[in-house]
Image 1 (cartoon, rainbow, N blue to C red):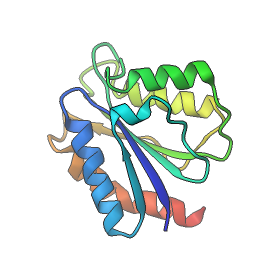
Image 2: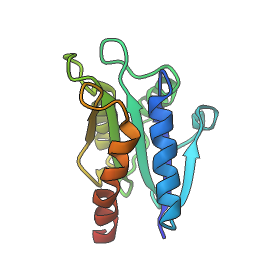
Image 3: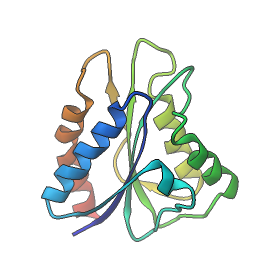
Image 4: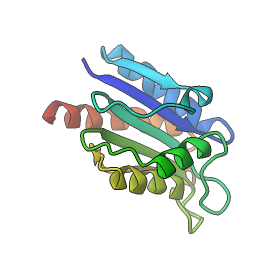
Length: 151
């Protein structure tokens, strides 16, 4: 089964709960999951032998949450070349704002710049349409599983 690291950035806990739900459901399917807490991100560089999933909410004017911003900034400044890394992004946002899912889009752009390859299209979960992003991410799991099985 796959080795998967899940990283989350949250303001009010929604992205964390979504990431925890995703981790639990993927573990139930036999995958080896490492759910990275904020303190673990300080020196974390994704291994190219694992799959990376980032679950991130957007705050302010399209900003990254404070808990994940230092890791984002460190990856951006150190720019490790990650050509074999495959990743997926689950972006939480509110489509009533111009900066809908901007934090997830920033991660997508950064990982692409680092040479990583998107395993699935960016998943945008709209708070205007659902109050339970964890339910949306569970319905996305078959898409992710299909993508890793094609790999």
